[in-house]
Length: 504
Image (cartoon, rainbow, N blue to C red):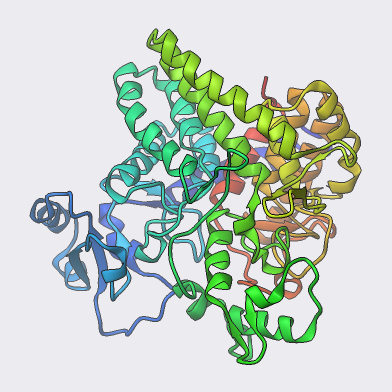
């Protein structure tokens, strides 16, 4: 339901803006120079931008395709290289080649992102942008085939980490529209390859049978060192060290992550920092300050999504009449549901909470990922009822708080994000809490439209307490800018305008 305070003119104006924005956010071969430019890394103005092609591709052929798509002037500002077979051998970072067009989030995020693409796809399908919707999914399938997984984004410094697994949901959402069974069948081995990325060590915790986020890279993230600096020139990592020097931390053993004598962050801190970025929630104190302790947790979000992957693969095999394989995947989903129930459901708090492997306890950090098991149908009706009764913890004037704590991080209060609002709304609707779901959707839409009318743009995140897009002064860690565009906000708005994001 659309709140009556929004006029048809307001909604039509917003829809027209989103429709136009898809073109602005699309990158294809003819935009290769624009795509290759990366404000997140230092770059000498007189040197070319590097584009890497997978070693399993026909590189000379791709070079000639690019030469036909681009002017000679643009080609001179690019350098096409074959990607080394070992990521550690990359000395100069660059863009990873993708064969088809794709939609980027916007602003400083001028490349294709793994989980953003799901919400972008929903918007493209609503707007009947069929060709780019098909290509969006195909580029992620290509990444699994040629780069080993769905990447955090298609830059070389992201080769060591993925993002929340939403690819199977994208495949089925697209198939609903195309009914292209030949294409769907071709996705099965790729979806299975991506699934196994998450369910074997080091992503698997064998003791619980649940998975964790785990990035493979070592040391500081290159894009953070250069681009996440404050007015004094301090990097995010400098601010983290100051925090450790200044404040007592009892969430975890700080000595694992910070050497006080040397005033240095440890290798394990950087591993946790990269892993936190793989989770998509960068940054929050969900796993202790800066989520440094994330490696030691089974997260609600990841395991809920893996349950959905198992369900999706079962559904795809069912479409092709493979009853035995369908049963195998459904059985896996049932086992995961039991494990989620045992480890991640907290009966006392009435919330789904992340599970700490070493202590065998759930972390009492209320986070909006508690709505994932409702969104994906994992919760029982009684569990959904308990979560709905706790809605007041998260409900804000502008939608849903990301967490219940104000930490100076963008993925904590008072901030709210389109995807988590959408997931909460769909989860509430799925279990019959329509009044609550509509109320949250309407609050978010009212805030977004008010800010759109003020700034004539849609942004990445909002202060849902003040119902404002002006967030930079409140963010202390990571990057403080509010990026415009914005892919996943566009997609979620179109979903919420079409029946409040109901999912049955």
